[in-house]
Image 1 (cartoon, rainbow, N blue to C red):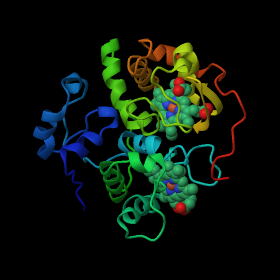
Image 2 (image 1 turned 180 degrees about the vertical axis):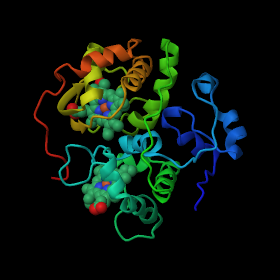
Image 3 (image 1 turned 120 degrees about the horizontal axis):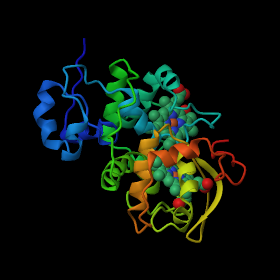
Image 4 (image 1 turned 90 degrees about the horizontal axis):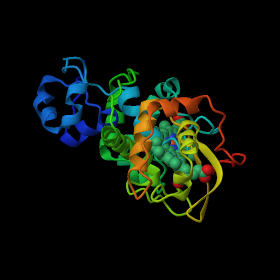
Length: 276
Ligand code: HEC
Ligand code: HEC
């Protein structure tokens, strides 16, 4: 039987969903004590000796959300949706070959994410390694990790920053500045600050079509993400309290209230994807 190994402190940190600590093998216990931030130490049960192989819901789906979902999503008709576990599981060996072997020049088909896409610059070696290890360890589904249980605005901002950097930053950039003509800015965004329920709905349901942010026109596609109310509240609280935005706090209850609301944010018909 193969044992799963984690090589560097950096990959250990990456291999937890939004900074939620992993269960660790004994060998890693000391290391992880050193790198686990104080705020999260009392939110997890003690480490068990259980397998440390990456799981889909905890470690891999977040990588897919940030680095693949603009092309591989529920709406795309010509490429697979990796946010769906059965689809990702069925094609896992090809995923490994495109993410790992092609990238190292050992497989003849195009490396993923597609060369020169913003995603190809934002995906890290630790992400690729996590995907390789996940596939080689049987591609387990796992369970959605228990939330960090943030109660105060300060705790939400800390948890939200992890999530933002692991998912949203692939497109909107860690600086919140976005990318001209492709991804609108969240920094000082007049559009974001004008309507918090609309912002919640965009993260819940995605958004397609034309949008004008700070006087600049965008016409692109943000997929919807399978995130919990707590995750979305934390991410948006971080965004609202960063990059010169208005300082609002968003609660999981407010997110939940929008789940049943009729999407108002989707203003124009979805454009054809760039691959159609
Ligand atoms: C910029 C758009 C884009 C991004 C981002 C992207 N892909 Fe792709 N992907 C494509 C297109 C287009 C194809 C079909 C062409 C091809 O097979 O090379 C494809 C094909 C694939 C295939 C082959 C599927 C099969 O069995 O035929 C895999 C596997 C794959 N992508 C995985 C990924 C993963 C995993 C990510 C994220 C880490 C990713 N891709 C990011 C556009 C993208
Ligand atoms: C795959 C790329 C991608 C990811 C990942 C992504 N977005 Fe977006 N986002 C977009 C695009 C593209 C638009 C504009 C959509 C349109 O043209 O209608 C957008 C629009 C927005 C807007 C409204 C416009 C603005 O600038 O104020 C908000 C708010 C937003 N995103 C928040 C988030 C948050 C929070 C996350 C992480 C949970 C996130 N996005 C992840 C691509 C992405």
